[in-house]
Structures are given as structure tokens and as C-alpha cells.
Length: 386
Image (cartoon, rainbow, N blue to C red; front, side, top):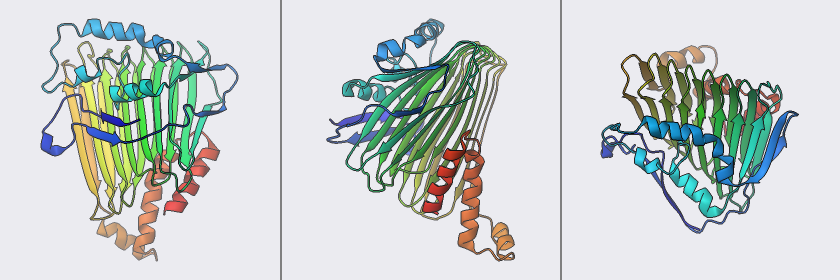
């Protein structure tokens, strides 16, 4: 099959010459050989249903989808509104409807993870996928955390060193009232793999969605997250770390759609670019009508270690409500001469100093991973790169 799709679109288009309205993907003659990830651990009290039709798996989103459609009746979108491009999605995702179309054309069924209402599950659900040479994988997961429940889901992907295929992952989540979802995604693929990671979901009254994500491998990685804070006092906290070296290309899209009153959205992207790596980052806060009292904050902190890197950033705030607080910031720079001089006076050369800074930034995200074995695996992977 061939893949031609537009992904990671901004909610509202900006100037074309910035090259950040979205990204086009074109892949020819792709054959997927695997259609699910391995469930390494499913703790007691959590159900896992495999090979579920998409319509059945995503039926949990139908009530909130209908409520959103009703709330948006008669409203005029921003200039360059791209929402019509996602009209077919029952729950919006960061990469967009093109991934849903790809899943349907490939006939991919869903793995549905569901916690028990009112139950806090201490042990994480763990998924893993290893991409072999000459293979490509596509999978979809739906995670349901009912009212008053708490669940942790950990997903990691790696590959043979010489693998050249595609690792495509679609994850959708539902967080009920007073519920909490901790989601961890760690990508450690080989440097020839192309990676798609599409994420989207909704959070209801007093619910919380906590995301920890690390992107360190692949030749090209397209990563999108769309969080719908629909309920009153719903919360989203996103911590993403990335490392781009050689000729790697990363394309990020993060959107927080804040509909409920007094919602909170925090997003921190922290990473390093070296060699001839390229990174696009889009961060959007969308304060909808009825979101009075809501707060949104998005921060990007990127360290550039080579004159050959390309870094593009596009923070965006959309607002249809007066009493809200939206903030964004970007810290983009190089290792300071003062820092290098300080390290050299203590016998640390420039290359060693760079490695220390890289590890410090990525370790600040890695230590949020609630699994010691996976943290050690990340450390070993970084040792191989650095």
C-alpha cells in the first residue's frame, strides 16, 4: 500500500513560508506484517480485549463528541481553521484524521485496556514492540479509565539496529470524572526506521491526564498529541524529552483544547539537537467558550549543539473566553562559554561537557518513568548514542 497524508496540522494556519502548518508524508509500497503490540504485563483488575472493531472500541467517546458538536453549533472558527479536516474523527488526535484513514485501510483492530471503576491500580500495564529487519508494524490502542479509577500504561518501542520499516502507533484515551491516567511512551528505534505516534483523548470533570514521552531514535518521527479537557477542573500534564542527532527529523504537534471551566494544561518539551538534525514543534492552547478560569502553559527548552541543526518552533494561543491565562515560552540556545569554561577548569573537555548536558536534560524526563527496568534500558540506549 501507499501512504499519502497530511499530519500534525496547526489548529489555525499561519504563514506558509514558515513551513509549520503541517507535514506531508509519502511512503510507497508499504506492507505491514504486524498489527498489535505485545502486552508484556496486564495487572489484576485491568481488562485487555484484543481485536476489537474500531467503532466498538471508540464508542466511549460518542457522548463527548456529540456534546462538542452541539457546543460548536453556530460558532465561527479562527482564520485558517483546520477543524473541518478532522470532522470524521470521533475523538481528535494530534497527527489527525490521516492516521485513522491509514488504520482503516490496513484493517487494524484495537487493543482495549480498561480499568475498573473506582479502583486504583498500582502495577502498570506494559506494552512493547520490537521491529525486525524488513518488517513494518501498525497498531491501535484505546485506554479507558472510568470514574474514580487510576491507571498507569507504559509503552516502549525498539528495533533491530538495521531495521528500515515503519513503526506506526495510534493511542486514544478516555479519562472519566475524578480519574487519573499516567501514560508513558518511550521510542528507541533504529536510525533507519520511520515512526508515527498519534495520540488523542478526553478528560472529564476533575480528571487528570499525565504524559511522559521520550523520542530518541528513528530517522523520521512524527509525533502528535491532542488532549480535550472537557470537564470542569480537568488537568493535563505533558513532559516530553527528545534527542536528535545525525540527520534525524522530528515533527511534533501538541494541542490542548480547554473546554471545561478551570481546566489546567501544562506542557514541557525539553531536548537536544546535534549534527544535522531537524525539529519542528507546534504547541497550541485552545481556550474555548465556557472555559473561564482555565490556565494553560507550554514551554520549549532546546539545546543546539551544532551549527548544522534546524529548529523551528510555533507556539499558538487561540481564545474565545475572556477570563483565562495562557502562557508560552521558548528557550533555544547553545552551551554557554561560561559553562564550558567552568567545566574545563575542572578537567572536563568540550565533548564530555556536551554529553553531561545531554544526559542531564534527558534524565530529567527519564526519571519520571515509573519502571526501573525501562529507565535502565533508556540509559543503555543513550550510552550507545553518546
